[in-house]
Amino acid sequence: MNKITFLKKHFWNGLFLAVVLVLLFVPSAKAYLMQGLMQVGLFKPHTETAAQGKATDLRGIKFKDAEGNSIDLGDLKGKVIFLNFWATWCPPCQAEMPSVNRLYEQFKNNKDIVFFFVDADGDFAKAKKFMDRKKYSLPVYSMGSSVPEEIFKGSLPTTVVLDKEGRISYKGEGAANYADQKFLDFMEKLTRM
Image 1: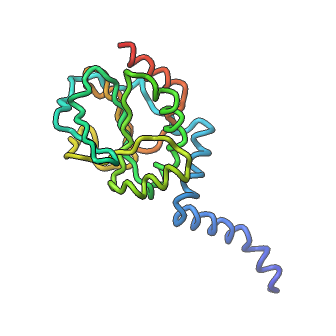
Image 2: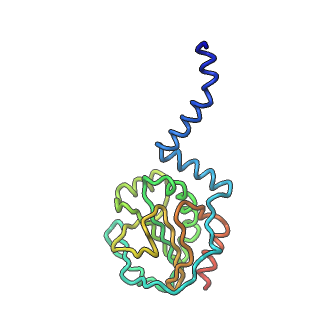
Image 3: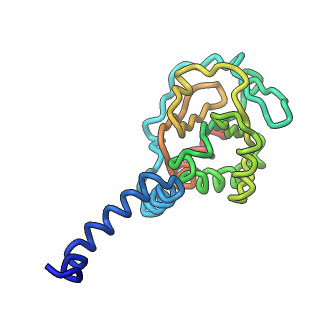
């Protein structure tokens, strides 16, 4: 078998292997693929299965901003709280960030909603660099206390929406398209309750 025949025969196998290796070892490539899948309708948040159980005691659950200011979730009763736990190195987090940023831009001036984008690493310098590079305007926080497992078990990304009474109205682990119209309507509905 000559060299050209060998190359023709194994070209597609080599190309497939190269794509798999890129997706495995290049986080931004994996994030880009996931963003494309979000655009075609996959990774929609399922708000119709939202839990409306008893109110969670939010007192003592604290987050810190880059200036060191601490905010206790217990002080935010009467507000809808959007919590997103993420990290700069996490491909699913990177994939959902454009949609999270669009959600934030739509509701950032709504006085009934408070947003927390919690960098699981707590590295404000790295998170700010990431936000600046991507041109996101999301307010970054770090954990200022322990967070109950019913809110965050450690899986990234995790998104939790608490209603005005402190009940978990939405919880999603893994990437999702938070700019989806159904989710925007869900957030709007929570502000009117």
